[in-house]
Length: 344
Image 1 (spheres, rainbow, N blue to C red):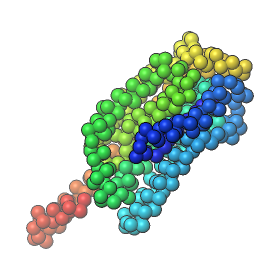
Image 2 (cartoon, one colour; image 1 turned 45 degrees about the vertical axis):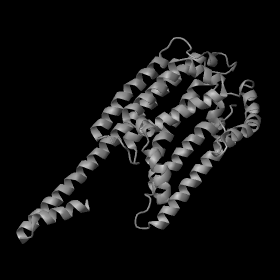
Image 3 (tube, helix red, strand yellow; image 1 turned 135 degrees about the vertical axis):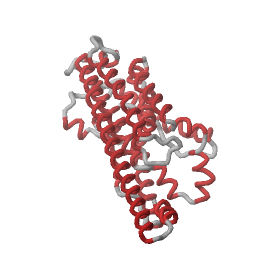
Image 4 (cartoon, rainbow, N blue to C red; image 1 turned 90 degrees about the vertical axis):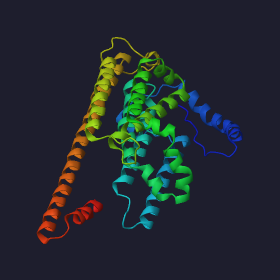
């Protein structure tokens, strides 16, 4: 078992807070670190993966806090603006995203992620193709802006959102490059194997996967306001450039003739598959499931593009109809057109 990074509320005295947290973090980390380096679990089966949950407080508490905070904000916004409620699908997407994180980091998948590369790959796919796009579709930034008071928005939230750092990492090119660098850098460098041996580094790896995936999916399916909105053709190009890179990495892992990560060859587990067969399955999962995820995203973008064009066509037709009606009635066409434009 692995340790988890403790998530604590910011303190007005950061150094004192860090010092106070060290004994607690040590007590929480030591038992799982010892377990990580010792026992080999029994062969995995469906029951073990479905029922082998471990409720690490470092993961459970932030997930529950995020769910409660989001639902509280939805309820508050709906009560204040009954005519402009939060769309029902957004809290659903948010809870699905949190559920994907919980399944990846708390279920039986977590128990076997350092024993089987294929299970570890499922964990990463859940974070990248499940949790990240679902959370982005939930528009948490928009909800935060709506629930905050004008003073809080003006003093704290908007300055952060408009800062140079946020604008930089939110740029689609930067997000694309960061996601690519993390995916390739973690798999072709010693980082991946080192993370299997070091619980803290493993947690950092998961945070990088989730964080860069959130940035990657924002320009494609994000509903929050963005300083760099992407038109639909650019979104398709954005996804089409990433898909072959995922394929290439998956194929490279699948057809490698040697075990790429020594950790999986030295776990001491007596049950199959062999380390090389396990690695081949992991590569096949990355190639197949990853490409399927990108393909679904491409199809969704095309569908959204078509709906957008249809809506534009209806607006143009309504404007032309208004102009024709105004011309027949002898009313000023410009004023009618302005009224239609203002209502869009």
